[in-house]
Length: 166
Image (cartoon, rainbow, N blue to C red; front, side, top):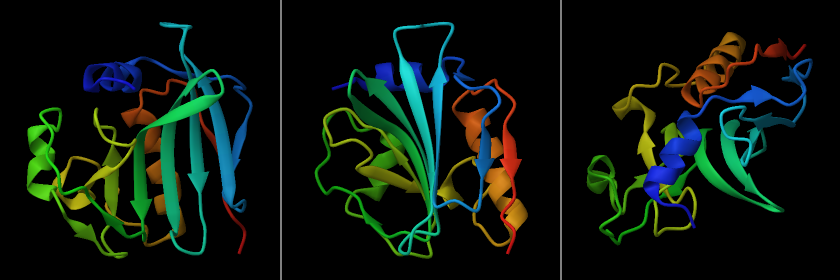
């Protein structure tokens, strides 16, 4: 289990794509990017961009430890969620007002790692935080989301995106 400080450190360190020529193909149901950090080579990361029948778009970053991974950050568009009811001392103050909150499928939200809870059990509405892509309403929003998510997790590589052809 990670502490909140360790999770923040892992989100903040600079990361690069293991395969710098990889392309995100938005016509696929799942895209997976493997990342490393030259600042701290003990850690590997995985970014997944997923669409499914329940959630229009889910973007997440996981910290890889040997053969398992711990979710650090995830953004859901069109997916429901229920936050825990219990408040542990490790819960950041910003999340306390959202205890026991139900997110309906139209409320986009960001899941955050919190020490003492299962990974990504806590979420906050995108409308209440400083993340520029509040909703996905047109195809160009997907590219904007990916670029802003990359910025948020400190990914320094250039990202190639192949738009879906509908």
